[in-house]
Image (cartoon, rainbow, N blue to C red):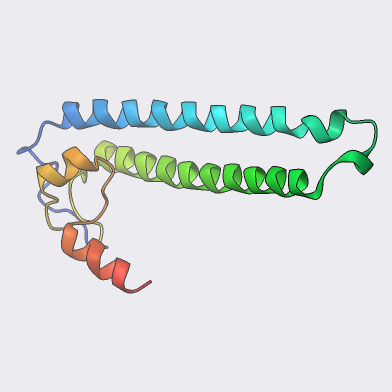
Length: 132
């Protein structure tokens, strides 16, 4: 990762993007709370309330397992998004927001409007995506 030598970008409204990042952070945290609440209420769901698991149909167990795995995947995705938002906020605090973590090029304002937590320019993001 290259170091920014020019200082904070002056061609974009950093306050605007800081506000967007904060809204995004609150949105993700709220979604995480909702997933956590579903997981907690699901832990004492129908299967635990029944007197015996004997009456529980295998398809019900499969559905419950699927929904739990789905929530875990959603939780992991939201945690990844939260880490990206926090990394972008950290970059803003250190004067490197809007600069590519890989090549140090300016990330276009249009890209930041769509993905305010973008850490890479389009070219580097495509290169990194191709390496997976």
